[in-house]
Image (cartoon, rainbow, N blue to C red):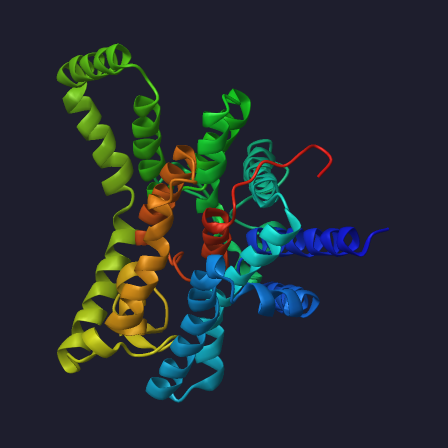
Length: 379
């Protein structure tokens, strides 16, 4: 067998393992993600060192190599915590995977979306098993396993916005499967993904994906169809506005009040931090640095308000650079509209979840940055 074909198969296997582990075990159980990534780099170090200096990968050289090293050294300078600074800075190195995917023409989209599809099935399956009383999401081995390995949060309660909360930390990735299935008119898959998003129990997952999905749908319709939909929507709102407002307030505000109180407490803690040391707005406090959150009544080093928290840790210079990195794919003409809309949904969801700078988010950034080539069935 040709050496290139062998290396392609090895890399495809390693990347598949990395994606699956990142989605199913987002908190990096037994450091599996790091080990797989290191193995990927070792297998491809020569090729990466050659390709990274090519003009088309200069952005990769900066954001996948210079940026994380600079952020790490800067954080060490601020915190003197070598290990924590590296652990929290290293995810940007993952963008180097783009070079491997491009070179070996690996169908990363298929790997990612199939893995997300498995996640959707698992979420629905857990809910079904609870409904037919085979398991109880409020207790038992499945719940214990999820909490023991910090995979997510599960439970059921009338206090939750959608009764069930089967929130795997990587579940916001479901928006990419939703937009793809909607774009390809895979109605069963779209319905299944929608159900799994609802079962995830997170308001942001539902609200932002629905809003962006409606915009995406309208964008693909003729002017006459758009006008008809808008007119019908206005008429429906006129007659049902009080009921709609009451339902929206009940699901998205009243039932989510406890989460909002926690986030307000986070903001109170950050406000106090800035009052005591205003220079943090410019300098940041370093990756992985702690502050006292009144939302948790404890010292924390990460919170659900990702953009604010990253600014707190990175400082304004690295935060601006990182935002340039995450915003650029939206303006890339090679990215299809459904990918852009799904990506914008993800970035909005990340406002209320720690999903901007970790291995989960870099699965997304790899997806938005790799060459969107067409693969033959033989691949």
